[in-house]
Length: 158
Image (cartoon, rainbow, N blue to C red; front, side, top):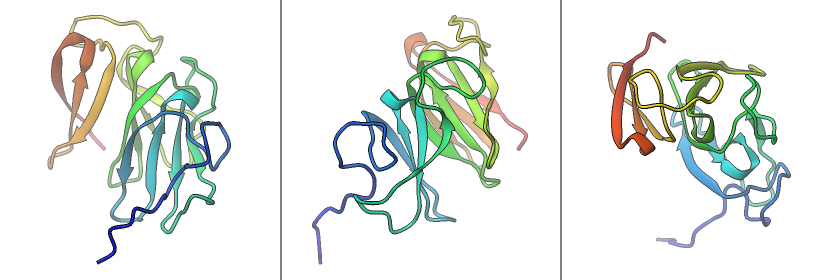
């Protein structure tokens, strides 16, 4: 029984290199592909690491571009990431108050929940600091809307 931890992503100091992370906030393990997705919060990006990655492995930027912003190819402090059965990437884009969906190999995402411009609010169609994402068995998306002190569920057609 080997209980020694192994670094599978980052571990090379804070930075924006492909083998570095800066204040990562969450991970998603895709049990189908074995890929590990990391919400690299301070780098405003989502990283993907293949099976067998180690501290010396480079990841791939699959969403965001290392620059904070609310354009369709940008993220601003992503807080969580999950992937659906079709390989679509869903991101709780925390400081943009939106949920982004990036299709496989896309260079930009679509705002599926919240405001594309980053506007915050308390109405059901707006978010304020989305934090955590989870899928139900029937493809509904649960969103922890942190600053609104609520959890919302959205029906998605994927």
